[in-house]
Image (cartoon, rainbow, N blue to C red):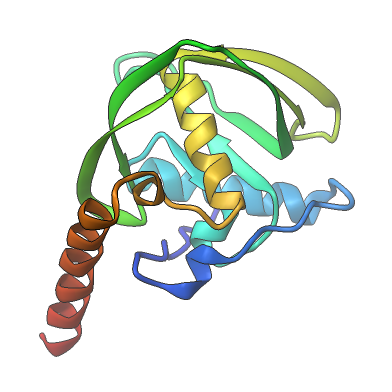
Length: 172
């Protein structure tokens, strides 16, 4: 498995809308395996293909606690079919926005339909952190970042910090 470079904001590639996967084959499974290895190394709990420069509807997620066995979940062409009315607030971060966090309200539970690692149609009721993580990664597939849910002022502050950090890194 290869470790892929994670794109960081601000970068136009993160705003690209992903396209559906036509066929789940070994090439797609290789991308998913590489994404999972990249996510674990980062470390993170979710990663969308667009974050590694592949604008396809692919997500890897693993919210298992550090002291437990990994339980990766692969979602291909995910679609949320149901949202709970109850919202939950959580301090969210993102591998594409390093060291930046903000409180964000999202539905506490969702039902998601997707193709699994082998192309089988699945349906999952997700709650809590798993629900939040899937919603966060699905935003990436639509070209949205978690900061896009924030006020213009908060979003601007975070993006300016990231832009400044990128420029300093280039100059170093």
